[in-house]
Length: 98
Image 1 (cartoon, rainbow, N blue to C red):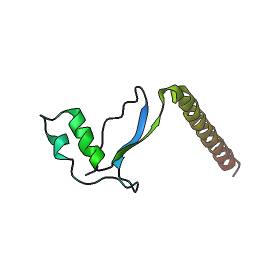
Image 2: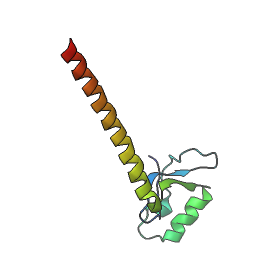
Image 3: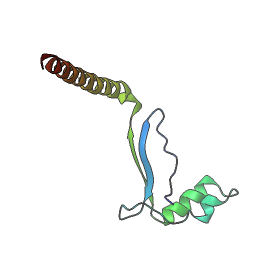
C-alpha cells in the first residue's frame, strides 16, 4: 500500500502524488496510528509523519498551462489525421491505377 495525501493545487492536473522516504523511495509502510485515528488532529498526523522523515512528491501541470496543453493535443491529433488521410489517399489512388 502506498501512502498518499491530498495535494493542495486548485485546478491543477495532478499526475502523481506519493509519500517518499529520505532515499526517495515510495513509502509502502502502514499508515501511522495517529493518521488512522478519527480522534487525533491533523497536526498529530503530520507530526507522526514528520518523525518518519517522509515528504510528499507531487507531479502536476498547473491550471495556467491548460490551454497550451489543449493546443498541443489538437496539433498532434490534426497532424495524425492529415497523415492518415494522406496515406488513405495514396493507397486508394495506387489501387485504382493497378
